Length: 163
Image (tube, rainbow, N blue to C red; front, side):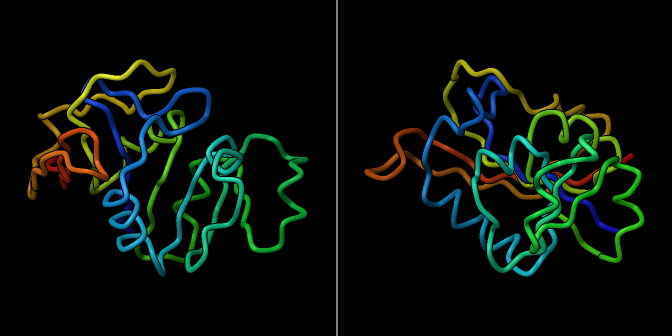
């Protein structure tokens, strides 16, 4: 199974504040949609709550410790209760879309990281795990200058596990 972490991260590692993204980058959202469409996506319960809906065109899987979660009432969501259950899923390719706790658990077993790096420091309350260069190699990197729709320079980066 190929496990890909996909995230949008500030220069100083933050991914959110008060369970929300801190920026709105249309190209990042388009890239996220293009890469994940038709694929299963796994997110923590807080991430699902922040999105507030099922993401169409994808199998939505929510990882929660709460065994009596109210999410069970939502028919189009699969609920799992531990990262060990991920390996039992019948998929070849899955995307981990957040949040902080899920990224920290899954970076140890991920094969790829699809990162949008926002070239600005933000103050947030949730961070993406530090990427150890002993285990990861950049295989693609595209830099973009800020424009009318994107208030900061940013890069799309793909990293592959090497160890």
